[in-house]
Every structure is written in structure tokens, then in C-alpha cells.
Image (cartoon, rainbow, N blue to C red; front, side, top):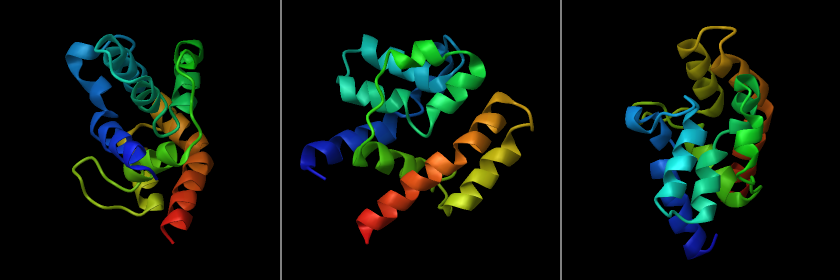
Length: 140
């Protein structure tokens, strides 16, 4: 990818979970809360949209009844979004390295069956897996 896209990916990787910060909490849905915050700070539109749509956020937005609010931020289907998904879906909460299936299992164990996150990750698994596979293909 271009140098510009690499810089964008690095920024998105650092900021994708900023919406978990208690002082930024509005909806309780961290991709949306993070995107809204970054937008108020004048962050570039692509960065805001990547944060909004990281790791299959649309699946959880659907579970939470926030699909219209998330739709304000257009999802870009691109190598950059794929790489952000790859990074998030192969790295654990403490920075540990996981393969995709173990990372999904780790998420599912942290959230109660039937919860919004558990349901969303279960539904998103094929979409996320395809993104991970595309990145692996690009990496050779």
C-alpha cells in the first residue's frame, strides 16, 4: 500500500478502540463513540470511518439498534480496512499474538452467550475471516 495508506493504517490501529475511554462514552458502542470523538477533533474522514467500521462493527451496530447512526460513516472496503481487521483479529487485549480462530474464541469467552458482542462476533466471523485471508494473500 502507499505510504499515505500505511500512515493511515498505523493511526487507525492506534486509535480504533479510543471509544472505550469512559469520558468519550455516549452510545456505549465504542466504534461509534470513537468515530464521533475523532470527528469532533477534526481527524481525517478516512480515519474516522475506519475507526467506525473496524472489525465488523456493522454486526454489533445491528445488535444494538445503532445501524442508522453507524451508516453516517461510509465503510470503505479496502486493503487498509482489511489490514486493520487483520491487526485487531490477530492481537489480544494485552498485545499477545493470536491466530484468527483463537482470537475469535478469546472474544467469545469474554462475553456472555447471547450478549450483543457475542452475537455480533459470531455473525461477523466469516466476514472477519475473509479479511484476514485477503491480508495473508497480499502478504504472500
